Image 1 (tube, rainbow, N blue to C red):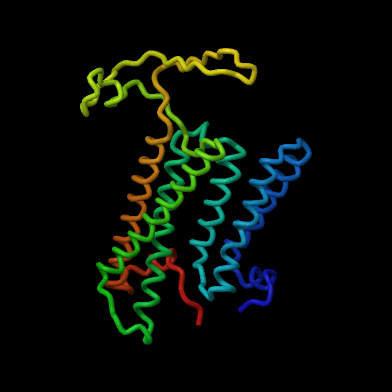
Image 2 (tube, rainbow, N blue to C red):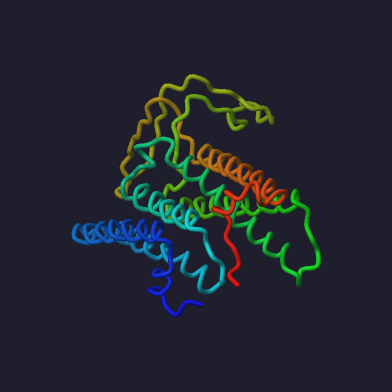
Length: 265
């Protein structure tokens, strides 16, 4: 076990260490600028990013699990892309596929972590039940999907209780709902080619406020949630398949080791 975080980074691969130091530098600069502009929400995101950057160290020193250099680098880039570029830089708004890309990577990474956990047990002499490659791959897939679902729970909770809009709303031109059935039957009524939607609300003084949504109807997060889970599914399937091949022939598919954490002896 490493005595402190400095010792850990001294023994870290130079590539992943360089990526970590460069990204950490940018995060600190962003934090200083956010503090100078009194944007304390961005200060929080920067602090959270620096905190998340310690995950590889915690995993290594506390759980005695070694992360491959490539996986560690991807984790650093993923955290930076999600928190700094995504939230502070608003890449989620400027680049339509940004959120989709990150959820796909998340599905792949989490499948690798789930795979390593069950593979470590499977290769331990104290664990008497030996699982087949297909079962290990299935557990890897289920672990990744579980993490994806839990994250969507977190997004929904943040939106519902904190009004954060982590589930990005989308404007759609077509909706189908039984709420519009005039006879109250369980039969959906389709409204197509919606040109605009008008929302009437009241401000703090009780005055009526009109909000117009051009181009259609505002979908409240459901499309974003399902897209996130679907691409998480794709990432999980991709790694589970790679993991399956790796267990079948570890020598032929050694490249998979770049994504699989290992128990440190």
